[in-house]
Length: 136
Image (tube, rainbow, N blue to C red):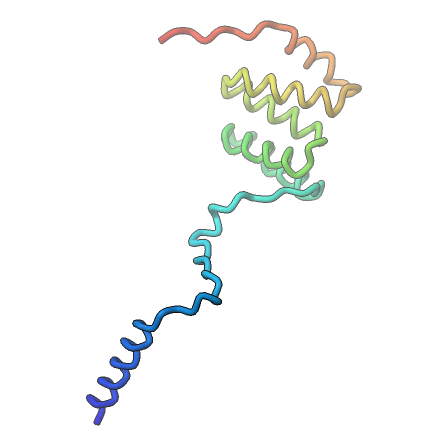
């Protein structure tokens, strides 16, 4: 009896598979396989930016410059007008010997906080020519 049920079930599945799909059905898109591959969307969130700055400061004290720079960059994405995050990001890039990105961050700092007490020192840094990379 069970063999007959299995045989009938198998035949009915095969018959369903051979039936043409109706043209009125819209094609179904497969679901995204990995949600982590989606681009992260940022909106103004000063609280999240402040949290990222705190975590970045923790990593900077530990000596994890890259991790700190990533957190400061996240803080800037959550709040583009966050002058302290731009400043700390520039410091990390300087320590990592990435002069180009440091200059970008210093420039962003000056745009967001031109009247900050640290602005004069940053302007002096930006007025110095960028050292050329040594050939290997």
